[in-house]
Amino acid sequence: MAKSGDKQQKVTRYISYLRVSRESQGLHGLGIEAQRRAVREYLVRVGAADTLLAEYVEVESGKRDERPELLRSFDHARNARATLIIAKLDRLSRDVHFLTGLEKAGIEFIACDLPNANRLTITILAAVAEHEREMTAERTRAALAVARDRVAKVGQRGRPSVKRLGNPNGAAHLKNLGNRAAVSALKTRADETAKRLSSTLHAVIETGAKSSRAIAVAFNERGVLSPRGCQWDAKAVINLRRRLTAMEQQNT
Image (cartoon, rainbow, N blue to C red; front, top):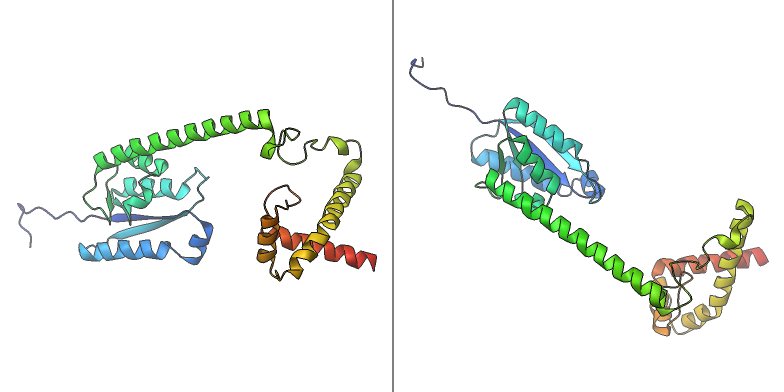
């Protein structure tokens, strides 16, 4: 029987948060399993294998700011007075939402790869991550401004007559034609472009280029532009050959 003067040892309980940035990783367990294993091994190492209350898994893209599972893990940890555990701090060290959220939540946390990190570490990392995000946005704005000035002066790809991407006239020439007529006009133009490229395609194939990738390389070496006015890739070649085949079938 414990004496009245004895203090009951406090048992630390944990909530784990696992995150991957791509849906494919979440669906197939790539990345998630490695993080889960790191958390499990850490808890075994510190003698807390049976103290994991819950696990929250987040699958999000780089463009998504909402982190519902992150917020749920914060709430659970705070309400259960548990410690939030993550597998790798370096994986989340530039995640502003995670860092600032963790700082504001005021909960204890542990990172398996850096167990000595503390709230001061998180505060510093959050400030650095926010500064990097602002600098990236500023560089993007500056680059876009330079690109707009260049297009205004010399046009797209150095062609003064082309002042914007795609069709320089936009859809103005299709106005009042209706959807069916517009689609027909676009198809006719695409067929004409494919027909114009047909002889070049056959010439390239005769040189020994068989695969779509090899044909794309040959087109680019010859300086031939794709229907979109840019470099060729395998997909563009496949689309060209598919359209030519359909045209041949219609003519038979």
